[in-house]
Image (tube, rainbow, N blue to C red; front, side, top):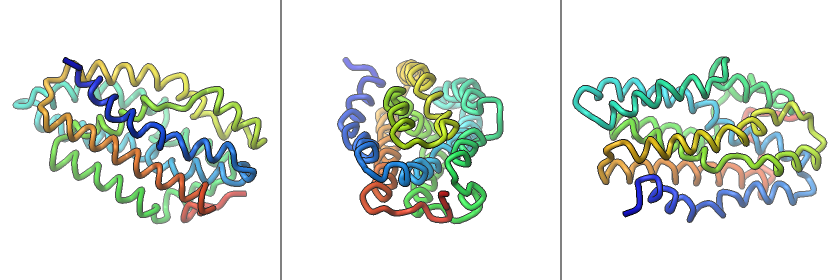
Length: 232
């Protein structure tokens, strides 16, 4: 019988081609230099909210842990993984530094209203964490299995001529996320997940992928700019 992680990967692999398509469109676009900062900014809302969402899931899991073995296992994992995602700084600071290197107005990005699609995604994930089960956070983290591809990032740097400092996090996660994904799969296979919890994890992952696809396509197909963000 397939493991929980294998069942999740089988579902997400169906969406993988669509998830990769916006990035390929960006690479093929003659205006890639102009579009890349906004493309990365469009996806940054997930990066910037990942740690706060993990912290919310940890708090909720701690509340349930005494009577919920899945929540108890989730506490152990999140207490270890959250510091790994901080990279020694404030949540999202490293990602903001990269965006600033690309000319993004990160003050506007942080203080202005987020794009509705991203706001809806974060709100949905928070609702599932608090009102369904905090294990929903594993759906968001499952995207580490679709980490940046180092040679592709290098090609984007060369093709656009943009500052390499704007791609530091992409290059770092091209190395780190494969390890993180393997760890997540081990966690999935050790937690005593119920069928409904597996479904919630897959739903959270697919919803995150769908929202990111839409946000990226808004940039590469319509030339849309991320609201409250300006590129120089």
